[in-house]
Length: 328
Image (cartoon, rainbow, N blue to C red; front, side, top):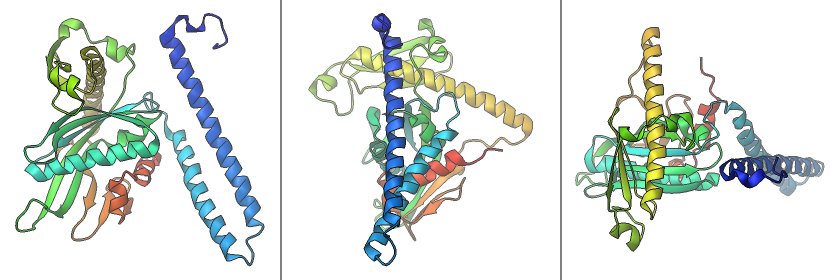
């Protein structure tokens, strides 16, 4: 198809196929790299007997191989229609004042670092600072293959237990933050095309976040409201108003789609008698810093005491366990 003379006549379609080709080449390179590592490990194994240094080397290689193979194997479970898409992450501070806002900011950094580990391109679409520290709300775009597939189960309430750095009495404090994960929908997707111009109300304003003199001095930031549902989205990451509007419309389509899916799921679960409301207290994961150190996922029971690595974006053990978990 790409060798056809008129391949680039439809640029949008051509770019889509070019990206798919690049992805397939990358997948092949990963498999070939794993095959090469397996061959080298097998060769080393032949020299292990009686040599502790080689035995250590082989052990390290096998641990890495196990992780690399597991990472590729996880992709087998990505069967959802949007799993291969990029994702947007919105983090909301819960009740708890400055502690909750600081916790929301910690989660934002954690996901930014996770994106860097995965090689995803991350962009901060909007960020609203707390009164003293932290954030009230932030939306992060994570651009990369399978970003939504990996991250969709992060959706829910995250709980932090620690000695509050903002307490004069050094009291232990529990904070909550809500994480919302949405797939990035294509501009020509049915979900996006369902939004009619007369259904939206658009406002422009000065960007409140970093971005340079040009961004902050012009009404480049965009706020879009969907009148039938009351859903409001904002984008202030781009220099041009048109680019911010395009991103805001993509996010709006994803939020409308997510609400529709949630309403449909709620109706089904209510009929089955198993609906659990997404309220505070139904946390999916707890992060404990005091009186001991532990991060535990309440759905898979995966836990670790290496809290620092988790906050540094090492989420693979939690995410892969949830992706692989069989839904009954």
